[in-house]
View (cartoon, helix red, strand yellow):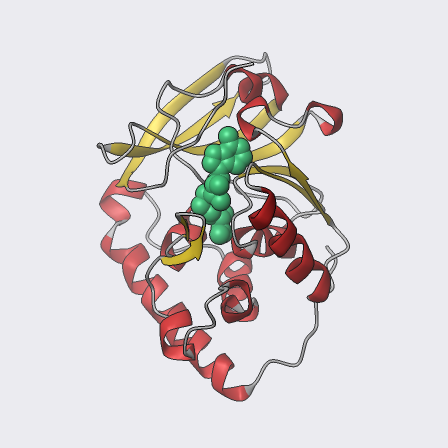
Length: 232
Ligand code: SAH
């Protein structure tokens, strides 16, 4: 784990502490769906530490930056709701030595939360402007354990595979992309929203057993921007 240590303003810290309490309430409220009444201390600590406001390009007020809501980040994309970031991170059960693939870098916020918990995060974003902006802020925040690639993440990032965990932050319409299943290590876990653009989507947890067999279970209805895949 490579920790960033900017000195956060007390005001931002206060907003994050309130956000942590909201995420805790949401976790309890959705336990019948997710099977998790609380999230791990490590995940909640990361939410309390990572300065979400620096990842939002339109520089909203701290009240807006730390509202438990999604926000626009340009290019028609969104930074996910913090509760969803916490849930998806928690579902991966990351050990400290985990190597993680994220598909959909977006603002870089989720990537930072993952990098607080895992050994290394490889993140793929298809939009060049977002990839460049996220990389710049992640470097500025001092992360040395993150790599960002501008490419179609539905194909994974084969160079660094296999991954102990894969997180997809855009909704896949045609089921779990085969390349991602291939690039998941035996014993690995994947979280991915499945479903059509503007249609019903289900956050899904996939696991690959020791024999390489992949199976998935529905977790929670969600609304994500689409995973856009270009033909070859
Ligand atoms: N994890 C991000 C969420 C961003 S929204 C955050 O914390 O801010 C989803 C992102 O997925 C968008 O930036 C979108 O451009 C990206 N995306 C969509 N399809 C993609 C694909 N095939 N490969 C890589 N990124 C993709």
